[in-house]
Length: 297
Ligand code: NAD
Image (cartoon, rainbow, N blue to C red; front, side, top):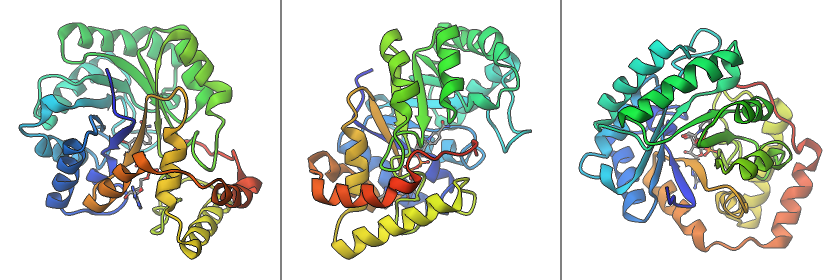
């Protein structure tokens, strides 16, 4: 897959960061496609199937212009919302395809694998079931996603997978992705997808949603960075997204979008140049909490 450097994160279409009118979400998706974003990421979990429904609606007549990826195994909150059994995975893809109004996805990912109680199940049951789905033509590639880098790395060393998606491990606030995961992806030729360049809305004027699991000190620091950028007339989303796009190995950076103005702003990042002086001031603010993470949400 030859994917665009900016990928469309569709979780906001499911209302994960607050409600967006359906028509606005459709306009956002169409603007992204018309301007060259060709990679779309969704999951049955986002908005408990709403994001898949809305993305499917927006993609009517446009499906063949993009790479479409969804997930399986996560359907609700921790701990009861997970089912990585072969039976559930096999049913899940059919449900997703129906909602997405297509006959295949380009990538099917096991969602948030650190919550699978038994890693052996993933290796011996889930991933083989996903390979069968690939053989059937319903998915072109298979991968895994999650927050815990070591869990992702361990599975990547035990099983054959095409891609890994991780989030909140490479952006202005954190960069431990390269210590743990990037080397194994390079060695094994695994596609690496980096999500959440805005640290799941911490680096936005609106701020993080109530459910955001980061410790308060990280949220407070994010708010201080937002204030600094507002006072200095700096486009924080621009600098944050550009920082991620410049990663030398990551194939695509997934940013969550459901509003037209965010798609338009994020497209401009392709031509954005980071001012090193401004970056230095932001990094100084972040330094006391740099690389602090949390348990998956
Ligand atoms: P993000 O860091 O991309 O932040 C999204 C938030 O930023 C939303 O509130 C959005 O409205 C806002 N935003 C986007 N562009 C903006 C701009 N220019 N100005 C101001 N605000 C802007 O976090 P995310 O959405 O969680 O991550 C991106 C995508 O990655 C998700 O939508 C999802 O598709 C994927 N993802 C997957 C996993 C997983 O598989 N486990 C986990 C996290 C994210």
